Image (cartoon, rainbow, N blue to C red):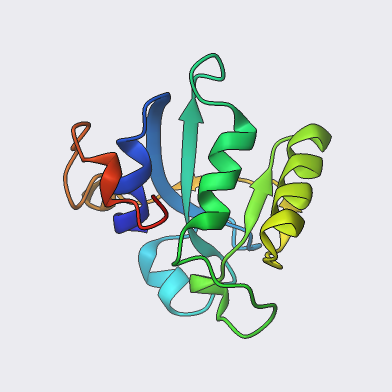
Length: 138
């Protein structure tokens, strides 16, 4: 989850990013419990300014990312590719854009979020000047 945090944090319109855990049922996941198979996924939480970066543009960029795998069930929960949405509108957008991009990625209602340990936050740096041209889709 470190490399996606570096890339998304640098996008114009992204206000904040946090790496953490979601999608499982363990009440207090840690890196150790996630690695041990507690059902949670290493994930990236993105806060963005919709007047600068729309949710549609953010999701389109996600689906164009060559690291996004279009598989169901072939990944372990720790590393699964998924989108957790906050509301019905986000879910509809994510499903539509995924279909348009030809990628079958689970789009799920948000589950409780747990920030990863502080040493994981911005592990690769906090480079707001990370060049957007390093995105592989452009």
